[in-house]
Length: 68
Image (cartoon, rainbow, N blue to C red; front, side):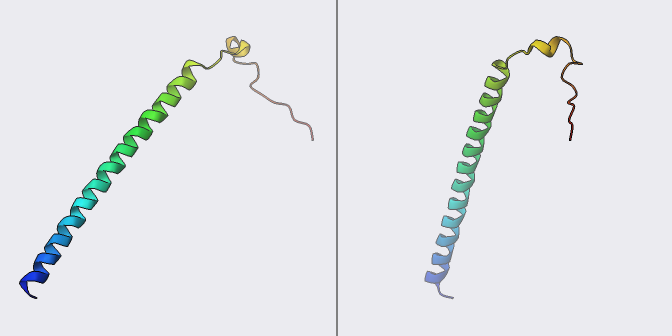
């Protein structure tokens, strides 16, 4: 192996490592955004959940009769 091929290999390896670090960084950013969006969605659902009239009596609506 000559010096030029070793230098070329070293450069390619360095670029590959940098590309991997950038991809991991982008993935982490995407995960953070997805987590924030999911949390916001869950908070909006629980904040706007209607209170049903049967919530005062937990025994109502607990069973369903099905005839075949």
